[in-house]
Image (cartoon, rainbow over all chains, first blue to last red; front, side, top):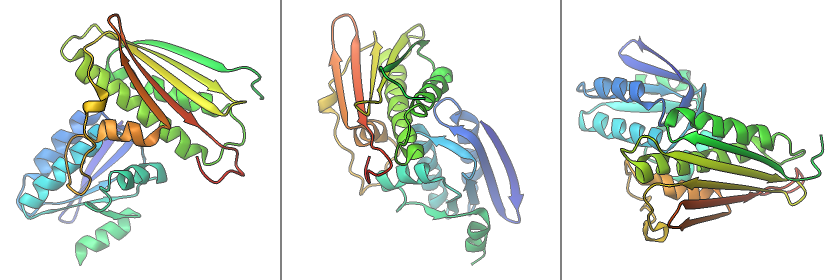
Length: 112
Length: 150
């Protein structure tokens, strides 16, 4: 797993390449905890190159979303491959998250 | 290549998360041997994720802090029957699968998706706790491209 983080204006972007699962979760969880603990944080997790998401990854994202919402921030997801999106649908987490087809659309949504 | 007899792959791994990608890769390689499978990418993801979730359950719950446990995984692909069977064995603590509640998906929850996903993604899931070892069996049938569902 490779993770890349950067800022796009006021938005903190995390891009995950490869597997996002129990064996790779720690640095992602640490970054999300630090970033979403800031009041009003705006966070985008780009899953375009994420090949595998397990229940540990789902738990990490849900924790980050809840923390972000408590701090009056926003956390969006984008770029899910079809099988990954299927898992969000099965667990109905597609209703909990704001999910965009690509990074550009997600960044536009933050701007509104 | 046409498989005339079931393809069998066995893995005997230390119960550590770092090795679980080997299970996923083996399943993908096996299923690529089955020709003309409908929506192969989704089928592979379903069996990879269900098997991975069983393994993480074994590592986290069955073995817990015991770091010398092992997981034995036997994957059998029967192309003629269009069936994949995955047997997993561990010697950790057992549990009652039937007693695990189905999560309320109307509530956004942090934990509890693992067993739910295993049950949803596979056709059959059985768990047997014996004195010498615990045994999971997962099965998944698959269709040719002309078939609409998997």
